[in-house]
Length: 167
Image (cartoon, helix red, strand yellow):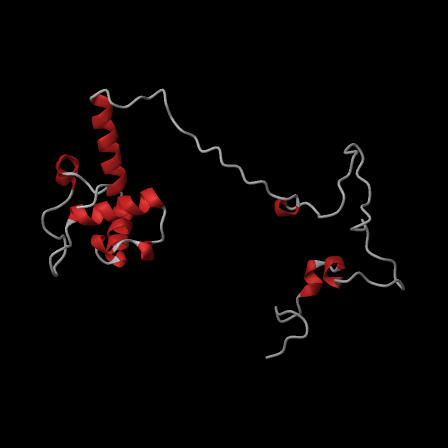
């Protein structure tokens, strides 16, 4: 047993939440304690499932058991029961919670804004040099993409397909 695996006292608390026999026909299940230790190792270290140490069994088995516990809601029930047990014992300090303060700054273009220079006055909208506010006059060079000036109905032919596409 590895030093970070579930100890006997920890497993004694968790064992009642797991069935003794598999719920479906087939071969015997791998040991719940070993599989759960593998899940906790994965959650603690953040390693990819494929890099799970071999002492926990095949990574596919550990992943499948974790996925089934999560999908059925049994993992949430287990965590709620453990939190309630710790709270009743007075071992859970409700005044201390950790909120992740990770912040990732997105660019203006990621939020839908143009990538051109920012406008300093927001009171009156003006035409941007990057995108004209009206279609070009006839006889002038069209923009790079004519689709931006076409009404949406003209983009589709009478048969419901884009123009130029034939079977």
